[in-house]
Length: 520
Image (cartoon, rainbow, N blue to C red; front, side, top):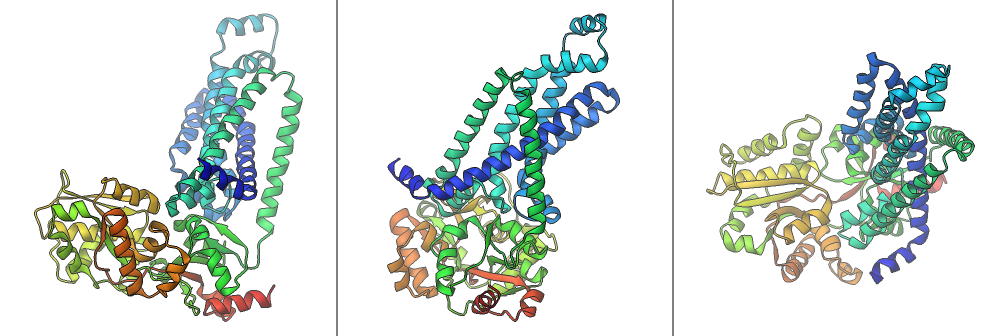
């Protein structure tokens, strides 16, 4: 606990900035949802013909996965706070619209009859009877929407909108619980605080009507300003990073030091980085050297002319207990050693990402092309469970392992693919929830083992020295075994759109530094 609070104190300025961003995203979206959601709920009450359409539409929006919705908005509105506010607004609509409709619609009929008997018009009944009586239900919807938005807003860090999600996703990627808590704990407190404030506001809603009106007007103005600034201001060169790369030892800070590379940055999910580069929302990204989108999007991989990035050779990482139970497994899996180079792996990723082929089919076709049997696919209780991270390459590799094992032995293999980041999948391995997964030597060196800088320097970024060290230390600390590398090196790389790089004569990271200096 002391380590956690020490971390909070050390990073208090960045955390405070993220907290303000989180509040801004949540509050901006909530105000929009109130301004639009309450009238929609009232309209649903009065329009029997369109009632089901209105309530059904806001319900459907709620079923769209958060990251998918952010991905849909990215090409339309770019990265940053604007698409985040739009997404949060859409998610906040359902509880506000539904609660407004329920509150207004279910006012006791005898009360409405009494109001009509007093000569009130429909408009007067709405403003003086239905809405005041429905206010507790409406506020309950607003409070629900607020808590939902605080949670969903953490995902907005994945599209460069900032907020407390930045530390959460960095921590997940880096196997750092303290960092995860640094984002999650303030987010939980924020949700509780906003819920309490709304509870107090509800008790004094009559006295606060004018303040609420002014607050809503100011919020709408603020959102318009954000929209204008977002659409009209843009750095000359913007670098897109993943949350993991921002903090890891072989990441952004070391890159800046090695190349003196100072440029504005934005964080987002790795799956969205390439799309942002293609759509000209960013100019440079940190990607992976075997990604299929390099070919598909006509990207240029900048030469790491100072050899900053360490080797990331991929190999199966397996539990010792699994190898003792199935002693023939290392020999079997090592039959894939050296069979995949960067060109092959990039092409396999391209088939899935851009040609939209099934990862299982791509894996089996490749295995068949190099002489392996692929006809057997077993279902049922697994003897071995293979895990994988949430990106294309790992889906393909998992299916290669499954195909090899099931077509060579009588074992049944289960897959747990799409696990979010190194921490999740590595914890699953050490806890015995999975038996193996494909990992990278650079990740083993920096994230799993957290190797100190002196030891890292002593390895000279040599692929064999890094592999031998990682293999030895991982077995000693965790009783896990690295098998032989598959052959490809999926290291980090800086990438640009090929045409933009050609226009500015940028072929290497040093060339990018020169361009930034000349155009400072």
